[in-house]
Image (cartoon, rainbow, N blue to C red; front, top):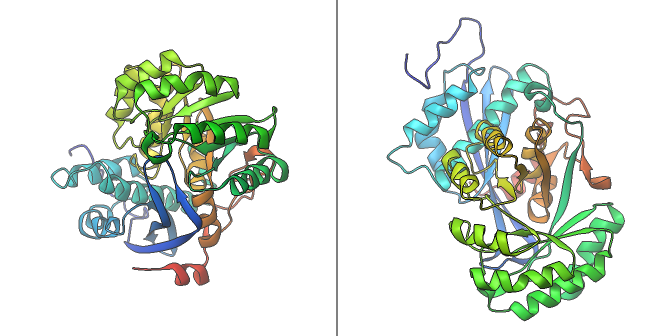
Length: 377
């Protein structure tokens, strides 16, 4: 029996089938970062059935992700044991070899993998964190938004909601406006953010790869002056040398990894000394199966991991790793997840408590009315 294949044991639950749906939700205001703007976000949701039990998972990306699941992945997992998720993850990776795994296809695999973990936990009537095994009861989060498209008033209001109303002790804004061509405005917005949150809150910035290496280094003293401790993607995450050089030159922690689609990418990033904290996105990297492996890679190198976006998918896995720094409480995804699902988490005080309700799996239930409103395929 080859790798990725496991025997089905009589009486064990098997995957009966998959359902895929696409939801597109408009933003509540124009959103943008250093390299992109958008006015809506698309979620591709997968539901995996085993008898009367259903697990759910999702990714954020192009609607074509649904076609990948239908054409490439459904037959691979259907009829297989629900218990053997690592084998199913391996089988999905193998079947897409010629289709091209990184990018959209990795998102498809991630969504199915997450749904399988949710299904397994539901069958065992356990919160997913309990199934994985907890390292902590609470998971720290940081407020994330502060889009380059926001005016000063909207940025200030968002930051004050996180800090004054929700008690979050860490917040992040986007910089690198217009591919780094508005550096002066970036500096003004950083200073304004510090005024909004006061001295007792950690301030993070995310350039989404908009700067050159020299720009990022020049910005370093300004970040230090305003107490910025997290400098995300100062240059392209594909430029491991540029990340490493920036890391050596600035006092803020340099971070990246959200566009890691394979485990080998994370290994290369760590080996290059490119980051102070590894980011990984469970909706892109291959699901919970691979996210946990990325966390182990980071731990072996004395590095922490942070979950990128989609906080309700990361929370349980994050609670299962010892080297977690925090999760991103990303405004766009939080808003969508609260619209589409019941059972969402409360970040009050700056931490989540995944599994505290005792609900099995991820603890999420689809809101049929909202799903019907936003469904596009």
